[in-house]
Length: 261
Ligand code: NAD
Image (cartoon, rainbow, N blue to C red; front, side):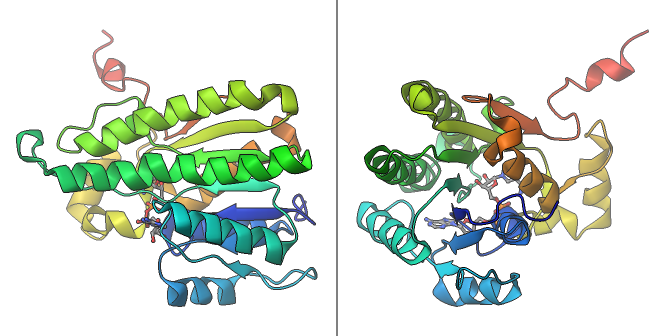
C-alpha cells in the first residue's frame, strides 16, 4: 500500500540530502505530512518541492542546528504547531571527520559528539516531553551505523558516537516501553549518498568497497528509508530497543566465507 502513514506527522532531522532526504520521500509517498530539518533552509525548500503533496497541508520546513538546545526547542515547536502534532521522530542527522586518533582535535571530536549524540538526545527529549504530556504512543527511529558494532579506525568520534546511539535507543526504549512509546535504530552499512562521493564516483574504489560486502554491492538510501518506515509502522508494533543492521551482510564476519575449508 502507499498510504501506510496517512494522517501521520513525521519529523526527520538531516533531511536535506542522502538518507534523510530519501526517508522524507518515503514517508510523504506513504501519505504522511513531514517536517524537514537541516541547517540550510534553501536546501530544505528544494527537497519540499520534490515531495508528493498531502491534503492536510504543506510539508513543514524546520531548519536548525540539531546540536543546539534552543534550535531544537524552536524547530520542534514549529513542527508540532504546523503539522498539528507529531507521531514519528527520525533522528538521522550525523557526520564524521577523519583523523589519526593521536592527532584528533578536541573541536572535531566534540563536534561529532554534539551532532551524533547530543543532537539525538535533544530531539528525543523534546518529542518525549510532547508525547508524555499528550499521552501519544510515538515512535523514534535513530540512524546509527554498522560502526555501532564494527570499529572504525581514524574515525574515533564517529565510532564513539554510534556506540552511544545504541545505548540511547536501549535506555529510552526501556524507560518508555510501558507507555507504548517505541525506540529503535537502523544501522546502515555502506550506502550511496553524497558523503560517499569519493568512492561512489571512482569505479576502482567502488569495486573495492563492493568486494568487501557479502552481497557485493553498496546499499541505496531507499533501502534504509524503507527500514526506517518498517520500524515506525504498526508491523513492528512489538519491537523496541533494537538496532536493525541493513548492510548487505557487512556485520557477518565475511572473511569466514573464504577461510572455511
Ligand atoms: P549526508 O551527509 O548526506 O546527510 C546528513 C544530513 O544531516 C544532511 O542533511 C546534513 O545537513 C544534516 N546535518 C548535519 N549536521 C547537522 C546539524 N548539526 N543539524 C541539522 N542537520 C545536520 O549523510 P548520510 O549518508 O545521508 O547520513 C545520514 C545518517 O546516516 C548519518 O547519521 C550517518 O551517520 C548515517 N549513516 C550513513 C551511512 C552511509 O554510508 N551513507 C552509513 C551508516 C550510517
